[in-house]
Image (cartoon, rainbow, N blue to C red):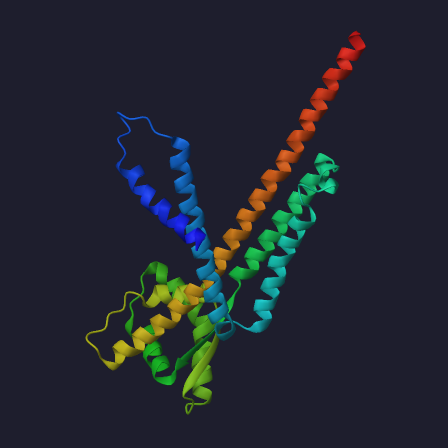
Length: 267
């Protein structure tokens, strides 16, 4: 409740920042900056909470558990490393600069591994038979492709859609078709069909709406995971800055020691 009250106060104060006469009046820039900083922090918290809720509600339905678990392992490896090398710990304070650089390089590598694994995410994409027939028709016989889209279509058809056709042809009595499709291919599919037009509230309209909704669901979940990635990257940036501060303090101590040594020599 206290946090909500402070956030409300900051929102009210923002109006003063927007309407302030900066030409004729002095102002407390520290106070104004503090207000903006508080709002940014609160917005970040809200964004992260929303992302966590999306992941909690949708990930088990749209992504294989094995992938989710491994993604969590890769995320925790990054966090475990930066916790292990706490800049406030005696272990880090006693490390040589080149050793700290090595630890930082390892953290960068682990973050990149985590991000790459996320970008290889695949989704459980299920469409009803009627939706499949509609999508197959517009992809293979209706939509016109320009020079750039031809290559996207060939890629999507050869890696995904030909398998979907084969799955349907092997059992035409199924009510729905389940596809395991990478996020990159979902983005290609959306790019290929997004400009297709339907008229009125027809069956085609409903099929098209449902397919676009399912694409949007996967994108929303993928974007939620990316918000978590950005949070981890921000944590690592703060950690890196703290390590730099440790090194800076060491350099200052070294400089003072050298000056004292020189003074002693002169004495």
